[in-house]
Image 1 (tube, rainbow, N blue to C red):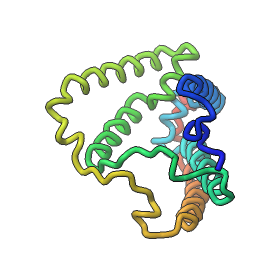
Image 2: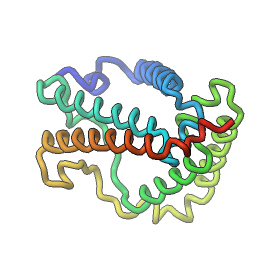
Image 3: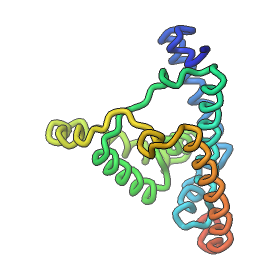
Length: 201
């Protein structure tokens, strides 16, 4: 086994922070080149007129998934050493809903708001400030919601475990799902092109 590098002590915590920083810069650059620094492009996703977000993110997920799977198959990556967070069904579902509503209203997610601000966008800055305000409020009310926050803990679970299917079969099904999603995205863009906020002056 050769990876994960950090787990095999190929570098220490300080170097891991440098690596994470460089990966973050690269990720932000890729988001900007993909047009994700524009709230209009991101908002168009919810009008079903520009499905670039779905295409890019689903492509990234599938690429990473296939890479992890095949690196594990050939023995270069120890899948058991990959860090995964625990699943808390209700708190994470509510958190996802709040994030989704904020995405629809503001046109950004946390990552794309930083990308937008880095190119001089004021609305990106407002979104970042709003995120920090939300974090502050959460910290202040945490004692009141701590029981809910820690409820419905299922531990670390994966799709193969939930579906009772082999890992490779789940990978195959996700790839098929992605191809279907790409096809539907193309059809949606053609049908709802008139709704695209990018076309507004």
